[in-house]
Length: 202
Image (cartoon, rainbow, N blue to C red):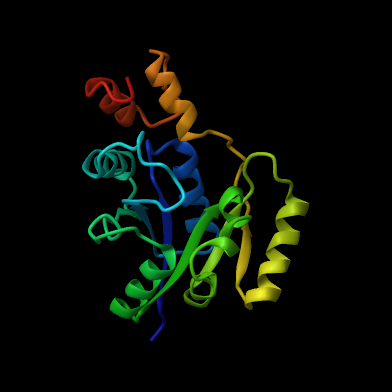
């Protein structure tokens, strides 16, 4: 039986912004994925948690942002687990629970250049195909060099996403909200309303 192709967009989503959504849609179209799971992380090992909103609030924002896209789905898989969540463990559990699915892990350039330092990168590459998007200051040439290095070192399957380089960061959005500046066009209208209504990041 042909396996379902499932994309995974992980992240703190603090908040989720249009860059995340464009990346998910690009992956869906370019690799003919059946759906993309937006999976907010609970306790990211590489980020300090003092500015991260409650799990329920971040998950609600993701749900609001993706509700009009039938191919996008909110997954609280990592939030529902105890302790620090690692991508390798998540992929191991998902693969075990869903043997009829194959996973495409969607990352930006910043993650691609550090992923070999994450916990158990070999498992990540064994259990998923990586889809990487150019972001920030990294050039296509640098991305392709890193991809070739990972493919050789880990026998990985890493592909470049043909996604526009939309260099928006959640940090920038939080700063704008904190200073009472407009965040429309950075996030979906409903997410902007939610942030304003709940006085988030102030």
